[in-house]
Amino acid sequence: MSTDINLLLRKDEESLRRQKRLKIFNFIAVFFLIELGVISLILFLLIQVNSFSSTKEKDDLLRRMSQLQEKRVKLFVLGNRIDGIQEILDKRKDLSKITSTILAKTPAKLSIEEFEIDNKIIVITANSSSLFPIGELINSLSDMAHKKEIISSLTLNSLVFDEIKNSYQVSVKSNL
Amino acid sequence: MNGKINLDLKSLIFIFGRNKPYILPIVVILTCIILFFQFTIPQFKTFLRVREEAKDAEIKLELLKENLKVLVDTNEGSLDSQLSTLNLALPLSKDFSGILNAIYYASQKTGVNLGTFSFQIGDLSKSEKDDKFLTIDVSMPLNANVFAVNSFVRTISNTIPLSEVSLMKMGEKTATVNLSFYYKPLGPIDSKEDSRIYPPTQKGLLLINKLVSFENISSPILPQLISSPSGEKSNPF
Figure (cartoon, rainbow over the protein chains, first blue to last red):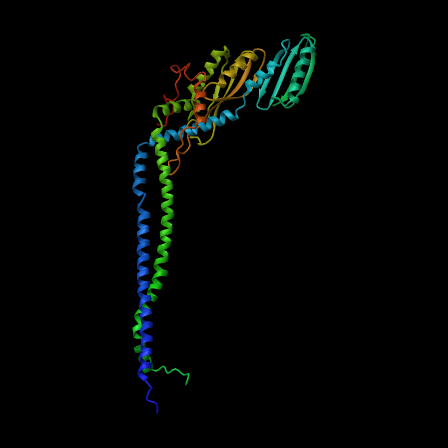
């Protein structure tokens, strides 16, 4: 019969293993606790820092700006007026400039009876004792229409001879 | 060995007794895991949100500083003068004295005789919608030839308040001119603290200089004879 069987040794081995396992569990538990605490504390502090940082400065700026509120309103009105006026000047048609250009092309011997202009058309009625100035006028206006200079078309409404006045009367219409 | 597990009370007490030291650490670990998901993760999301808000606040702060700089740097005297010019050119409300001033100035300068004319005013008691261009239309008979009428129209185009000629009908000695004088009520004022304030641009200043050079801005014809119904030009300040 063997006398070397040591049952106590096995019991010690198992006990050691159990103690080691327990240490590991305890270590993990403490580690988790500490980690959780540290992370929560760090997040709390970061949230506090980010919430607080700019509030005071902003309030100070707003207070100073409230003292200049009238100036702010004036600047707004200024911008509003500038935009409005620029829009008007950009879109309004200069009928006097168009009229001046047309009149400049009118021969001296042609007498303008009627000149009507709006945003879309021009109607000119003129008379002359000779056909030559009338021809000149029509040529000038045709040339402008071909080049799309101010007018885009030219229509001869009428060309008549007035026996009483002994003069020719022409009426032309152009689209702007 | 038999694979059956004996679950009677004694066995359970025995197992409990053997594993009692493990209970506390396991409970702590489980609690930490639960707290991590229930508390730490939402706290992290809160931190991300607060950080974004802080970034936005930083941007708004910079904007406020720039706005304050614009306000401080703007000379109030110049601003008032510029505003006065612009309000004469594009009035906030119907400016009858300004219109008559422009018409009589142009007629005097060009030597054109005016016939009887009238305004189309509309309902004075009705408040007008903002943000739109409104006009007072005038149809004017003139006793002048084509060249004089054209000169009149050219002159009145360079007077204030701003106007636009929509029709010129000229005969040998008489003519009719249809004019529309602009005005524009003020829309709602943007008073949000985070909207940018703009100083006048170079283009805006050039426009103001151009208006200052308009012919009747410093030579009113009829300020003493005619005044607007309220007694003063409209001024929101």
